[in-house]
Amino acid sequence: MLELVSRALEPDEEFDDVEPVSKETLLARIAGGDREAFSALYDETAPRVLGLIRRLLIDHAQSEEVCQEVFLEIWQTAPRFDAAKGGATTWILTMAHRRAVDRIRSSQSGRDRDTRIGIRDYETEYDHVAETVEVKIEHERVKEAMGRLTELQRQAVTLAYYGGYSHSEVAKLLSVPIGTVKTRLRDGMIRLRDEMGVAS
Image (tube, rainbow, N blue to C red; front, side, top):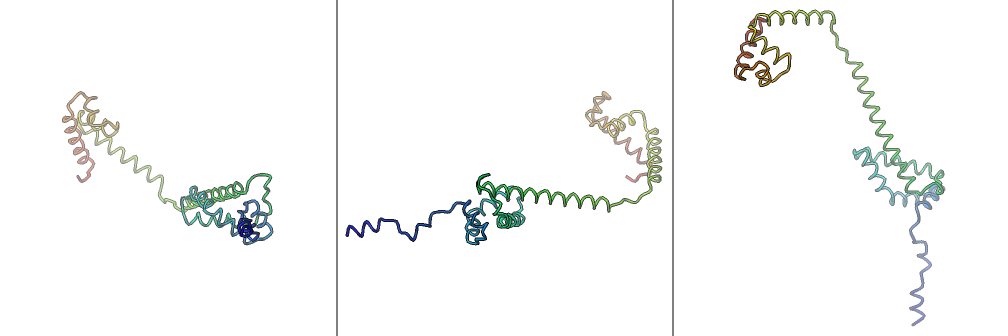
């Protein structure tokens, strides 16, 4: 009976290799083409790799694509892994970070290229000389119309529309009540529209 108990307490030789295998060991086996080691490494590291990539890219579909690229790169470059230079986790996450940043740069570059093409293809066709003449004529018409306003109307309109002052600021500058400013502006604008032939 004592023999049975002591034998039961002895470690079973069949389960000696059940201890977790380090990522460094898995990478060494992957370098030799071991698919099971690759599967084990994937199961152990994929959630963390995908999490890092998603924090950078946000977009889930792109993150999954980049994650696949990372594991393909691990499969292809496992022989180059050197445990003396750093741990397997650091090596894998550095690769994931680099791939995610490359994707961000690539996406930005694509957007910039599309913008440049869009700007290049969008050519406004107009006659610069004709446009300059029209602006000058319109400016002269406004100047003439402003000359037909009363001095008080002209002051209020000039300060409000050309100076960019608010009604209350115009009232302070002219030392008049705000109601007076509003009246002058309203009357001045009506007069300007009439002088320029603009429908109200």
